[in-house]
Image (cartoon, rainbow over all chains, first blue to last red):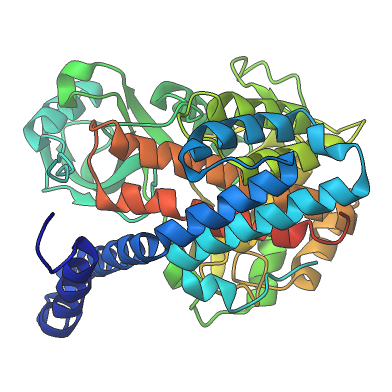
Amino acid sequence: MNDHPTPLELIHIANATLAAEVLPGARPDQLYPLRMIVNALGIAARELEAHDKDIADETRGLNLLYNDNKNLDAIGVRNRRFARDIRHGVFESDIAREAQLRQHLIVVARRKLAAAYPKGLQSPGEKV
Amino acid sequence: MPAAQIPTPNTDAIAHYLREACKADTAQVAPLALLSGGAIQQNWQLTVTIVGSSLDGEHTWVLRTDAPATVASSLPRSREFDIIRFAHARGLLAPKPLLLCEDVAVIGRPFFVMEKLPGIAAGHKVVRLDVDRRALARELALAAARIHAIRPPLADLPFLKTFLARDVIAACRSYLDTLDEPHPVLEWGLRWCERRAPDDEETTFVHRDFRTGNYLVHEGKLAGLLDWEFAALGNPLEDIGWICAKCWCFRHEHHIVGGMADLDDFIPAYEAASGRKVPRDALRYWQVMAHIRWAIIALQQAQRHLSSVEPSLELALTGKIVAELEWEVLQLTDRDT
């Protein structure tokens, strides 16, 4: 077992140092790559922080959809089957199941967006 | 895995090539500068002085070439050169193409040279311009209508593929099948599109990347259309949905037409110029498709990084844009499930 700081703690302090000590004095041509680095570290931290809960939520959603009680380990294989079933219209037999499917996808998409671009959850998408 | 440095084409080799190609006594090439844009290809500003040829004088041109890794749906440079020549001849605001070099011995990759049109293309700058947005939207509408007035068969471009709605869906699925990880939300979006695919579609010449970032604005006017590498035959409304997709608003989605204008500034002008109706349901359909197709391209961009051929933080982060695109697909489709 490794000592503290954990990977997540290291990412946080690395990102904070970059933002506080490097970005303000950076040359104009360095700003874009530095901002990308800050962004990448932020995404990595948020994904790591939420990972266990995300997998649990996703597993619970799939268990509901498939009326299963599987554990967290099979998530990759299950998602492959899930994607294939969506393509073949497996969930379109009744409105309730389709609504359940959509609700699961919203949960999955929301957690991905919360890590990749949290601001995206603050404003509803413009619609025509 | 260190980030790949973008290799600058060798100016001596280019000068030698230009001297031969222009039948000049001499051709001097200034150091090249990488231009903004070109998410898949590279555009280099090429300043050249030619002596002893019909092209005597100093010229500012653009050299366009492949990035180290590219994406499958992007046409080769020779085909794009043909398309630009076709589009320029038809008055579609494409830059004038000048020279095509397919000899990889020159700079290691095929390239072509075209005139450099004036103006700003970078999306994040264009959406902040202090210009008459309605007038620009009308110009964009007219430009799209002109492209879509061209119908097959196109004898000059026999290689063009046809992408109607079901073809786009099939192409997206085909790419998803090559990936290790599944993408349930994109599969759901594709299924949504499949169930609502139009039975009868018009087929015209389409740009397929008609958006902010790929047109030039000079002195408040539309000055050029760039990046023809995805051009094909297809449903003209695909181009309309593409430029009206939130993902091409550069965070200015209060102006849904490319971050520049409102639908009322653009759609009626397009309808008047093209004689074609754009029903709101059809527009939404192609907006959904736009987000899915951009998500597929974003995944392809991430693969360019993951393949180790072109290690790049920018490409890696492009893969993370997929989350936003998936979210928007679900937002756009939430009224009818």
